[in-house]
Image (cartoon, rainbow, N blue to C red; front, side):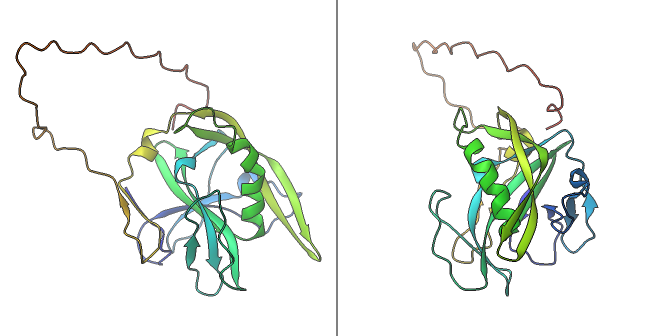
Length: 223
């Protein structure tokens, strides 16, 4: 699966988002959505949670005038604001269940408060490479001078191995013209797997037994 993050209006990329306009009294569990590029939004059911691919989380700045992104080299260091119309934001792939993967790209106060609320929880990752299953845990209101906004509170329910649906993606275009897409090698075709020549008089090493698989948790097996 190739995800084009250039925000062109052509293509069939699936995007994920949060409807930012409703007030605190709105049923916010029903305002997460998905949509294909240039197509109407569809309500997305996140009642069983969703998996955030934090291994590919990116933070940066989005220009409100051109819709272009400038990503930080590392999520641990925010680069200076490029200009007055640029807003802080993030990009992260999301597994929504039944093998469906979408891209969540958002900027502005709502997006940044959402990520900030998650920040301390994400720092508790018990093992490198694991990703969080998060659920919608209500909403909060942000304020600055005369401006107000509502943002979702996402709570980490458990950490888990990266779902196969996320691992299956082969390339990501981060919308940076100066950087080639990060491409993962394709698996060999059946019948084309190279086999090493046998080595005489050398005993094959015995692999240690694999650890038992973690017990399945209700509501997570569809990822």
